[in-house]
Image 1: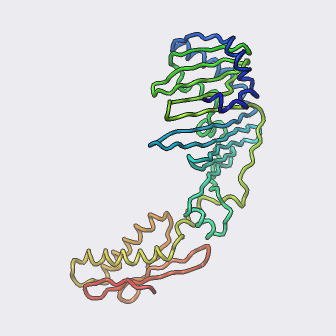
Image 2: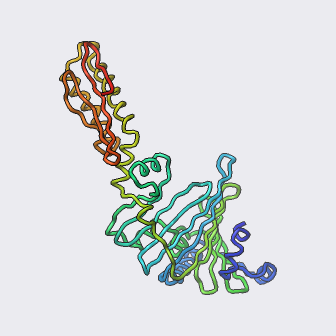
Image 3: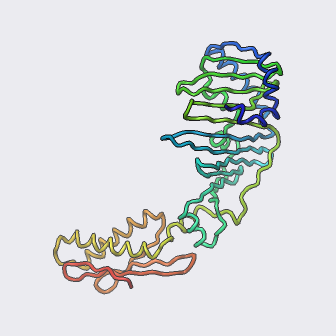
Length: 328
């Protein structure tokens, strides 16, 4: 259960007292959908001011799909004093993360095999974040779209009948089942501030949130850990450059023969059709990797890596009813 998973955090936040004492003094009251909505709006109103100096927390997730159980942990924080925020996920559910700074932009984590190979080839072997510049980024808007903001989450889908349970230490639980059959509980401290939440679908999903309030410390990715969007796109485009040049030549030769319909290949047609194939390939790379130049009897397809200065080239030439691709 959620309380067992988060016993330490819950005790520290004053959510639970000794089980026997809490159970003995619990008072549970049924609430209509309208009453639940009003009560949780009240919690949001009390929680919002607590968020102003900053807030952070974690999310424990476990779910079962196809008989396989997956678990993961997410951590997050918002630091208004420095205009920064982050959200990171680790575990069997995957590894991901994003950092943001108001007026500058956001750092998005990457870790695929191709991305690692690309940044290493580009001379940034330690890079694991791509930076997206956004001078209009505000922490409030970014947080609303990327973080479990407690004052927003508590009223996201509040109009459901349920129960209000008051404990003898002044803490309160609001519980209901939503339209997707999730059993949801929000835990509020004696001051009316949201401190934890859980969402459970028996045998399928278990999510447990905890929040803390006050100034946060967020360490942004370093320059060594960062690569620009432009350079990452370019590095991925030039990854396996030699293979891409070869593919362009062989694909173009095949296309020329197909379009020639078993007739003698005309050099002018070969050049036109090859350029069309190369343009289409460059579009898939999001960069002009491949260059086409005319040579006697056909074309030369080439590329030069801007990071390593390595070069590769193939030719496609007309030969009777055939288009011949050869390494230059």
